[in-house]
Image (cartoon, rainbow, N blue to C red; front, side):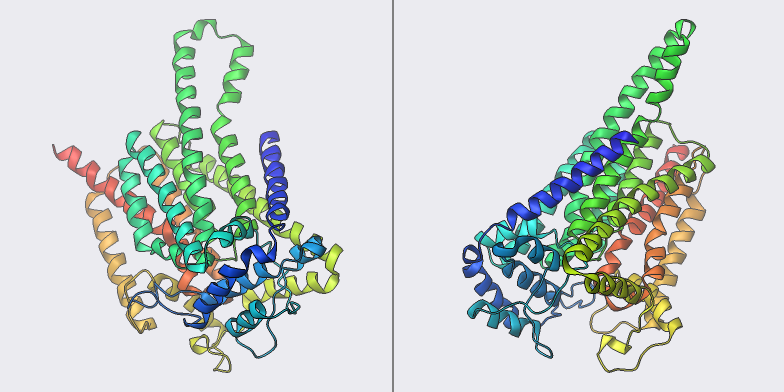
Length: 463
């Protein structure tokens, strides 16, 4: 675990150092593109949609406008407090776009703190705003995700992971990953994941290839293997897991640093699915009990790293800004879990029951995968879910075969983690379903991967 701790600590230091470094960019260097961005926000709805399919293509200009406002008001004269408070200008009962437009045209003091998040996306965004307005910044992030995804797909196909490569690509399309080029808020977890996956794949592949070569050598020289070599061999057996944990620790920290609580789980679930698939390719899957223990340990590493980074921000806010900032963060966390939600997410509307909120956190998110246009109801969503579930079960039942590995069982468990996330953060998932649904990427990829392997395995047996 020493490597994991070193990797995590280094990641924290680098993130914070970059945050302060990029905060030194002066406001006047951003002014021109901030004015253009303000014009964009004033000419678009806060929750506009890019296509006619409004649920899967709804933008969150509201969140992006607040983030832009925060970036604009970083104060180089009081850098520590300014970064930790993440303040922006928005008088009470005034639209965020109106407030931002006034702020970029007049000298004002920010009056709203947003200290519960790191807002580490500023590390990328502040330099980009020197060159681009909000439209250009979003497009650069979308292109970055595209380039990293293509690079990863090339790795997969070159190393004969073509089934997973196809399933991953189709899965990204089904959760409308292209929307990351139209909203900064949506892009950040996918930026992290698009860097994380190829790095993890390269490291795991090399580790398992080295391990395979070592195992071959051990078999050839088995009669010469002394106790010391046996201990070294045993240590090497854990190397892929250590690599996984080190990458997950870094990913959890960076996700907490840059994300607005959107689809944070993808940086764990997709990485773990990749680990299982590479592990299975090299015939290293263990009995189901051991694999579940590994899954739990890996989850603890990612969640612990993610939680530690958030706790660090809250602790720093407590020291620098006072107890109000800390208790506000706690109250907001409680709200995300069990706070009230209203019909249609409209302020002042009827508050939905606990059952409607919790069940809605599930069907509203799953429903966004389907191409609904202007309406999405419980009944129609459940019909689509039932029909797709029936097709999936039928294909699996008809083409299933016996497998020695428990990989499919573990993959299914990992694919259910977004559902657990929706249930735990049911208020947040109910209200923000139009972007939290992309956490279901892992569920879509796993279903397609298992079914494709079932059909291809059946076809090979029939030849």
